[in-house]
Length: 247
Image (cartoon, rainbow, N blue to C red):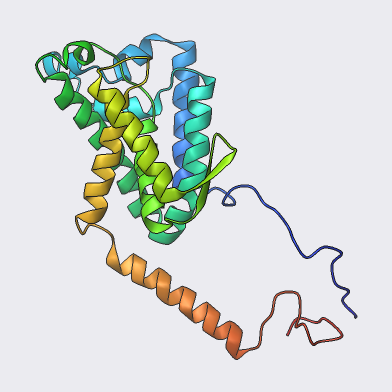
């Protein structure tokens, strides 16, 4: 049967594609925690990160559980949107197990930074009793990893201005650094964001990347491209094929 060419040769798609297993589980857990906290607000005080509770009352679970709580619909919406947009490709490349580990290292490092900052004389006064919630620290780590692996990919700042990923991360890192130097304010945990960036960078640059997973990904990609050339596979048919069949 003859195959006719499509009427248009260009297409546009938004986002990296379907959810990967780890990101699907993380989003489900965040949404579930958000709904529970909405029904029972006291959960936020118990599971959110409050340095005073960790140090004085030994609420050691808070540096982990705080990542699954959010302060409002837009807070969780933008965090989960960023996790999907920038995390899916990383999980496909690394595998679900390593991505999950990296996510919690970034979020845990962000919490540790907040705890350390809360104990600093002068600076920590406003942080020690403050409540920090949200996946932003872990998501900032995902953004950093994306920028290291795909530095020239354009990211649209405010959905308008295209900026290479590496510069985008530099900008948000500088904003968090300057804001954290001025102390906590505006309801945004800039110190936690900065901690997520630093923890992710140290983890990735410390030789902890799963080398075999990375090599396996590159090898499989090379084999697929080699098989395509070997069997003369062309998506949509060859340009010189009048029947436009797929070979």
